[in-house]
Amino acid sequence: MVKALKTGLPALVIVLAMFATSGCSDIKPWVKPYERDKLADPVMSLSRHGNADAYMHHVYQSRESSRGSEGGSGGGCGCN
Amino acid sequence: MVLKAAPEVDVAVTERPVSVRSAVWLVVLLGLLISPWAMAATLPVDKVDMLYHRYEGGGMLIDGPSVLVRKSVGPQVSVSGQYYVDSVSAASVDVLATASEYKEERTELTAGVDYLYERSILSLGFTNSSENDYEANTVYFSVSQEFFGGMSTITLGYANGWDEVGQRGNDSFEEDADRRNYQLGLSQVITTNSLLGFDLEVVTDEGFLQNPYRQNRYIDPGNPNNFLYQAERYPETRTSYSLAARGLYYLPYRASIRAEYRYYGDTWGIGSNTYELAYVHALNPRWTLEGKARYYDQDQADFYSDLYAFKNSQTHLARDKEMSSFSGITLGGGLVYEWKQTSLPGISRLQASLLIDWLDFDYDNFRDVTAPGNYLPGEEPLYSFDAFVTRASLILEY
Image (cartoon, rainbow over all chains, first blue to last red; front, side, top):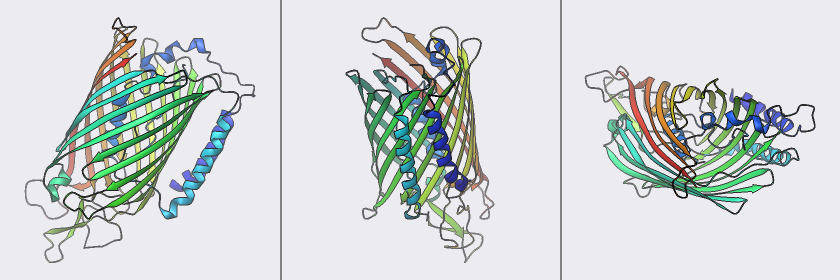
């Protein structure tokens, strides 16, 4: 699995990069800014509790071998 | 973002090519991201985020405060500072087996700056974590950008950590551990009421990656009804990969459900799966209730054993229960009070939360040598424990 990820990582990066720069394609954003009131509601936040969310990542990292991809490091809903 | 200073860190000499490759990809993607199709981004809001946290279970009591202050400086810059304390009283099964109960305190300080540049937010920060036998430093950098009409947000992060590992009662003991994190995140609006998020993180460690206090056991060659302890010996390098997907859906009434899955694998042979489901329900415009369930399982490290057949029976030796095969569940609930446009002077929004989680871990091949009764080595009952985590949080935006 680790080997597969080593190979897959560059491929994923390329796909994401192409997606990120595909602004000239025919696909247009289909959710307009004025249609994002529900997405902007705090109940739809992935990190609503701020520090309290980061603390839970610490609790798990101290007791489990896994680490990373907790999702608290960025992202956002594109509501701004 | 607060990056943890876990006592495990960084790249091996043999793993360096992976780091170089990852760094090159990071630079390439950064270049591609500064594209003309992105939408405007906004800085995080000014706030004070106060937290009291408490963990109690498995012989451990850890609590303390955390305060984060964030303030914008002009339209393009936001600075933040955080103070965090863990007061530890430890009498866990690992400690009781070979040592005695202890108390200690860990203090963590973080300073960060976010810079809004055209369509990107660039973040830079430094964290220092200090305790009497462990010093950890981390610098981190990330860039986040919205594009595709604001429906997509991509985040790239890099962190470099360097730790100094000590040992109480042994002043001559001093080891280093270094760590690098590479993060890639994508958040995608799917419909007017649903979101998806994907994360990928690679972490590489190099140095002294074990706990200097923990020991493993082997059968006493002079008496097979007895066992003896020897020092742990971990590999000096480790590389891990984690992939996560999460989805959020806004229900027909004011409530949301969230589902998450994460896969983890590393070069020590540990693999894990994490599943989480959460539900947030608005009682009225100010009060919300929330609940969650989480399930975690992992396979042991290749070199782990609860009981080795004889002394130095293999190159790497570990009996740390975090290296064993086990599973854990979490059930959590919380109550949140949110007050927008408050009448409090200078406060634009207030959020107060009380969150309680119950954690339960069951070990598949880590045995409890402190269990009362007479057992032959390797026939002790399997270990399990549960714990309560309490978080009381107050966020004031101004």
